[in-house]
Length: 148
Image 1 (tube, rainbow, N blue to C red):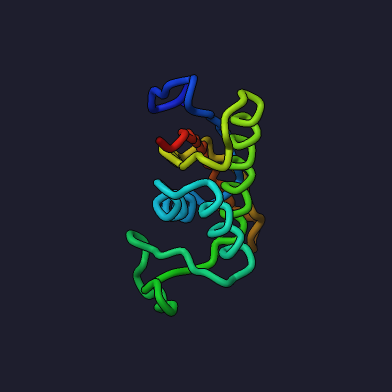
Image 2 (image 1 turned 60 degrees about the vertical axis):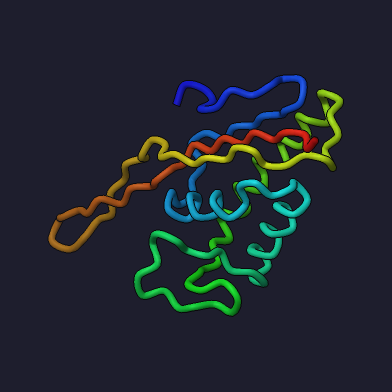
């Protein structure tokens, strides 16, 4: 991932990027779909609710044999991914404040998660064998824009 996938106006937007975050690519994709288009305060509150297990992330794509949660349908509580995405959003908010933008009047215009590099590992097994025990990583990009 060389740079950002979207072009944005530098006068009204703030960006942040997280590279090789050790979180699940599937859960990060679902969380990005949940908070895309939200105002920053709503997105931070929604991620805080996921971290405290009050609100489930609705699973649109990877939802086979997933129990339904009240008000959302099939969903889960990916705490680790929500914490990592929240930290990248907070970084984008601090970048906006540094640029002199109104952070309270911004919304998440672009948020995307793509697979990062795989950190290869092995787990010893019986009789001198070994099994792959790889760690998936995610590259996350956030662009916040001021609302009109």
